[in-house]
Image 1 (cartoon, rainbow, N blue to C red):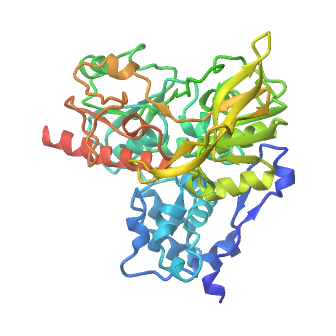
Image 2: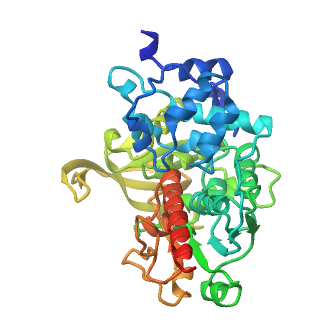
Image 3: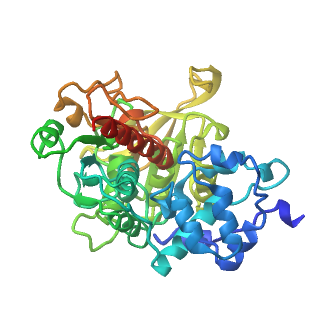
Length: 462
């Protein structure tokens, strides 16, 4: 029965990791990776590839892992993905490549994500770099944003021979990989910075502290700076709130602010120049991966943490692995529960939150059953901090300063799914700036599609 069960991955003990910011999952070693790779059936019609938004040749790289050819496996992955060490850690493989794995029908799917991480980490330790372009095209392309969509688009264009410059608004590159995802899930120095260095090794230039729409506009990049095409991968960093009474109290954070201050500014460090509040009891509102990240960060800052979500456990949008880790670490889940009011003391600081019980009614437009309030079921949770994790939308600065760029009612940039082309010739877009907040790998898929679209666009202009 060995072939039906995946090789388990080593993790930090839950009680230990709940007190530190070191990586939870320890990954496979060589022996474990090669043993897990042997479980792959090397299907003639690999469904796993169809489940991958960036179309990695999964059977090929796993076959190379089987024989110990890590460099070959890395180059196979790198043909399709600019960020394998990132994807191996944060991709929802269970609903994508692994969700299509034939092994998963009668047992455990092959642990594709953990094998990808093993390859990327081993390649990094060995100093292996992705292969670049053999010839240059002599054409300049600007990429706005250094998150997963921007890095992917830039990397693919560089491999095609384009002269690519990434413009990043913050002082540090990486986008959501740096400010949004905590260190214990995605190490910044050991993983993210190294992945960015690999993209730069392809010839990509990177300029930080450049706010497009303020420092320079897209029109100026194209008309004065000589960029023949632009990709907008600026993400969605504008947080949403519930607009309930008391939401303006001190001690109410958006998950975006809470995580940015902790991850990017290292506010969890007591010696930080911008320390963040260390709550004693914290309520996190929401049920996605960002909510899990915020909850687990607050826990590591010493808080008792409650996750309040208006649907049930089956409807939690967060990855099951993240929910499981949160539970193991001691986070309390108050499901079928919705906040209605936040309370504060005479000085304006949060003292508690009133919630109401919910039950699931008829399905909504997305097919999920709509939550309905249970009359008279209100109850209070004492707390000194509330973190709202209700999703984000794009900042309107770029769209409002670019002539001829169409946006929809959600303030997202309108772009064609197959190639990222917007309403403005030569301007492409993808990732959260187009879809609203989504996953890293879907943003990467959009960046990849846009790189192909830009290449076709510029080639047609010759």
